[in-house]
Image: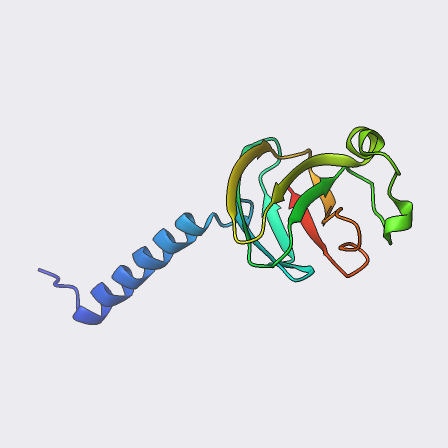
Length: 142
């Protein structure tokens, strides 16, 4: 009768453990839960990948002394600087913004939104002066 060697059992156990880790990580990189930290004029991380069409839970923590926004722009909308943003909030919301949340200094906000169709979307802080200071990131929906 064949008895497996201890080294064979170890290899099998390691392979099973790696498979479990890959399944838990979601293999394709798309997620239904993301976290963002905003600080003095930056997002951390600067990119996220979400599952298109799925409900996404986002947790935004503001470690800065100022209020910040996490604004996902509509597909195809990019802005180089604040002069390209509309002057009224109504225009901004109807023509530019896919989804947004505002987070006060020292607060953590958890919200949900439906991920947009597949594509790459610009994320900005639309509070005056913040975009021009470099507050931009990227959301990929796949």
